[in-house]
Length: 453
Image (cartoon, rainbow, N blue to C red; front, side):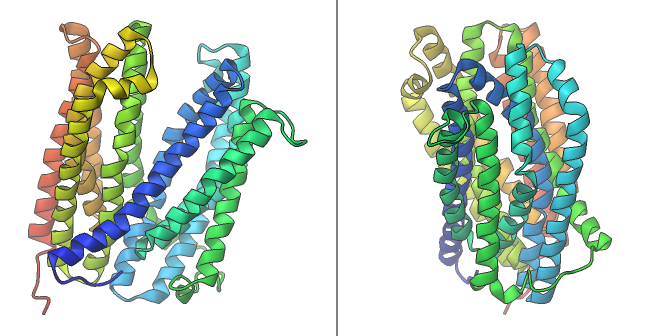
């Protein structure tokens, strides 16, 4: 990553970092897609079991891995300050913390998984598949958490193409092991949907070994000598990581879990409405990868400039990223408006579901605009290591404004199921306004641009 002097240079560097992140996020999205669809081709019960298992695992994983995202602003600021020695120490402490967190999840899961599954209204076969799927997946939990630390280190150096290549490599590996273990091909055991869990675990180990090899072997990563010294555990460094990472993790958890809560509340509506809601939400989640990727890129470049005390450049990057996200939101919104029926046909042939899905997609247009502001702004704030207020704003926007308002509109007005979407859009808009104000305040009061010569 290099110092930039013009807006054009900044835009080019931001795009060069952004595009590989976007491809990486889409690849990770596709990995879950392959697990679900390949299990679905085995049997409906295996599809249901894998879907239930994934729905329990994804909010937990995204929240906890969000904690480890703290490595990105920590490393990017250290690199910006040219403090290479501290980088390797921070990364290794992040690895230790990742292993410790995985062990905690193992322990907690051993006690609560069965009660949680038994508390759900599931068929016995589906419940057993979900339990065994999560058990199989657990074998890859340690490498998955460690990989998130290593990915954060690689990305913090601006080398996002590397993690893109590693993740793209993971896709065919995961698909091949899914094929072998779900269907029992070439002498492998036929495990059904549970095989998708083992396939993912194997994939996590392989991509972690690949990331370790790259960091040891190739520049600029090898220059940081990350694995050449075995450091003692540093609780003070863990505290620094957790101080930044816990608010990030909770923010991500609140944002991802709100949609699960809405889906739960919508169970009172008919099957057509629920199917239409899920289809529109699935496509909106795919489009969300764009502002999310811009957000992750902004954390890297803003952290780099803040570490170098080039606050004017950090400010320019922040708002350049927001402008780019808003521009993309208008493009995505236009696509949604013009092709909403074509998009709906991807998910269904049922005329009633198709029509209602197309209607939900109109609301998804407004999702895009709010996400285009609040998500990149969150990324910029993480680059400044300003995460506590972001966490509070996210909590209020989704759980105190969005969900209660949506529940009221859906149950006490004529809005019906659309009321939940209106509530969430309102929460997103409120969050976007508050987060934008927070970024403006941080740049004005705490990180004033100085003469950069």
